[in-house]
Image (tube, rainbow, N blue to C red; front, side):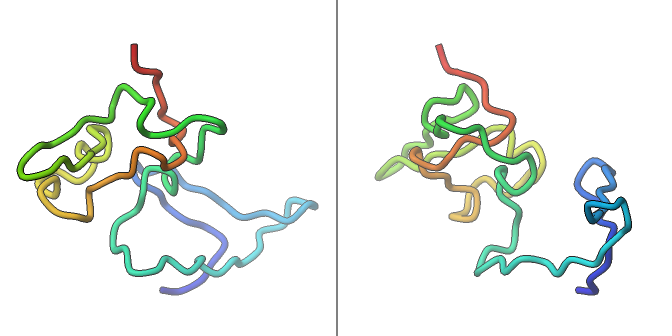
Length: 102
């Protein structure tokens, strides 16, 4: 991937990297590991002090064991809810779309 100062995120949001003087700067992509999809934390940031397990959007999918999923993530990647790529950990930091479960 080419490195530049402008990125288009999901939903068409354009982000620019600026230095402290307002000039556009090039920033390389951070290493992503083995994941091919973005996490909710990468898309929306983190809600400090909260976890995915406390969120209303977290639910368990039960078969021989329980796999936890995020219903918001599945809206962005429809059809990908039946793989390990969409599994979440309850102890993960909550994303910026966190809503407390009742």
